[in-house]
Image 1 (cartoon, rainbow, N blue to C red):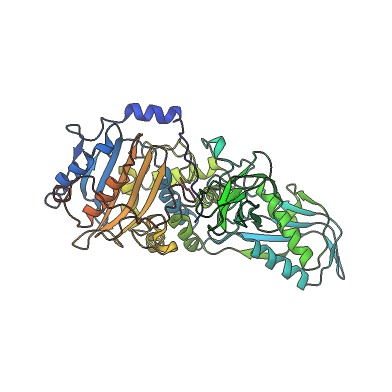
Image 2 (image 1 turned 30 degrees about the horizontal axis):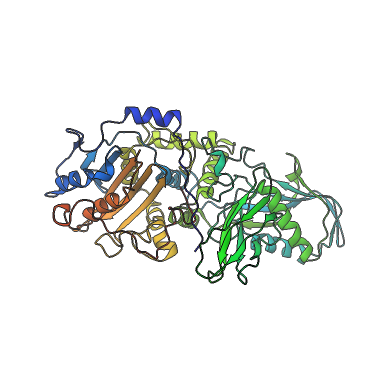
Amino acid sequence: MRPAVKRRVLLPTAAALLAALLVPPAPGAAGDRTTATSPAGLAADLDILLADPRLTGAHASVQIADSASGHILYQRHEHALMLPASTLKVVTAASALQLLGPQHRFTTEVRTSGRRSGPVLHGDLVLRGGGDPSLLATDLDALARHLAGTGIRQVTGRLLFDDSRYDSVPLGPGWAWDDQPYYFSPQISALTIAPDEEFDLGTVKVTLTPAAPGGPVGVTVTPAAAPVQFRGRVTTGPPGSEFTAEAVRNLGTNQIGLTGSIPADYGPADEWVTVDDPAAVTATVFAAALRRYGVGVREQQRADGSASAGRVLARHDSAPLAELIVPFLKLSNNGIAEHLVKEIGRMKSGEGSWRAGLEEVSRFLRTNSLDGDRNQADGSGLSRYNLMSAQQFTALLTFARRQPWYDAWYRALPVAGDPRRMVGGTLAGRMRGTLAEGKVHAKTGSMTGVDALTGYVEDASGRLLAFTVLVNHFAGPSPRPVIDRIAIRLAGGDEPARTGAGTAPTSSSGARQWEDCLRHRC
C-alpha cells in the first residue's frame, strides 16, 4: 500500500465561482426539491438525508429515475451546474463507445523508408505512436524481438519517434500546475508507456525497499530503462516509525527528488511518478530493448511529419475499447480519459486535440438531446472548468441502457463493496455489509470540495434505477457517508428515521481508497 498523497486546497476558477453564485440555496431550503410518483416514503427519506449537517453550506444536485422508462422518482437542484470531478468519465466513456466503437484499437508501429542489405538496415527506424493508452514496456520488447527475428542487426540511421497523431499540448485546460509531478496528472502524448497493467500512462514506478535502520533504502524504477535520475535519498527508520518517504519529479526535468524515511518493517513501497516528454522516454525504452536483442541503433530524435511514410516492419495492437474501459472506469484512470478525447478528435475530424475531441463529444450529446448548458474542458474531470448537472448525468445513464454497448459500459463501472480490484475499483471499500453491496454500479468522483457518485442501483423490487448525487463547496467533514446512505436507501436499505441521518457505514479500515489519497485519482 503506497503512502497518502497530500491533498491540496485548490482555488476554484472564475467559472466555478460563477457557478457557485448561481446554484440555488443549500439543501434543506423550502421548495428546492421535486418528486414524481415514487415508492412510499422515499422522498421523505432522501429529504432527511440531504438535511445532514455535513451538507451545511454545501450544494447538492440530485436526480433519481427509473433507468428503463426515464420516469423521475426524485430530484433536487437537478439543473444546477456543479464540478463533476471523475464522474465526468462516464460522459467520455459513452462518447468513445458511441463514436469510436467497442472494437476500436490503438496501433503502435515500427516503420522505415530505408533499404535492407542483409543484416543492415540503411536508413532511419521510426517508432510511430498510435495513441495507445495501454502500451507497456513488454509490448516494446515484443516489437524489438520481432525486428531482431527478421535478421536486422544494425540500423545506420536514427531511431525516430513519432508522436504526431495527437497535438503537442501535454496538459489539459484548467489543470493545476503543481499537480504535474503526480501520476494522476500525466503529460498526454500519442506515444507513451505505462509501468504496469493499471495503465498509468506517462509514469514510472519507483520502488523503495527498506534496509537496516539508518541506512538508505533500495531504489528501483520500472521500466528499468526509463531515463530518470534520482536526487537525494530515502532512509530506513526504526520499525514502527512514521512513513514520510516521497518521490517527486522536478518540473521540466526527469529528475526525481527523494526525501523522508520508511520504517524497517514496512516492506517495499511503490510510488508512481510522471515523466517529462513521454514520447522521448518511450523511445529510450524501445532503444534499450533493441540493443538487448542485438539490434544496434544510433541516436534518438523526434520525427518530423514525413518520417512515417515508409513500410511497416512490426506493429502492436491494443485490446479493444470495450476491454480498455474496464481499468479506465474501475480505477478512474485520467490518462486513458484524455487519450479517448484526443482519439475521438483524430478519428472524427482529423485533429487529435482536446478542442476537436470535445467538439465531437458535444455533437454526440446534442444529437441525442443530452447536451444542454454544460462545460467540458477535458475527459477525466481533472479540470476545474468542467460543469455538469445531475439531470444531464441521469439522462445519459437512461440513454445508455438502450445502446448496443450498454453491457460493456455497465460491466466497467465500479461495484459497491466488491474487494476485487478490477470489479469493485473505486467502490471496493464502500457500502460493504449493506443492501447496496453488489447492487450499486457507479462512477465515483472526488477532489477538494467535491464528492460525487453517478450510476445504477438495483432496488428492492429488482428495478434498475439511474441516480446521480453531486456535492460541491464543502470545507468540513466529507459528505461521502451521506452519498453512500442515499445509495443504500435506493437499494432498499433502512430508512434514516430508524437508523439516524448521517450514520452511513464507513469503508472497511483495511480497504484501499483509490480516489482518496492512496494512489489518488481526482
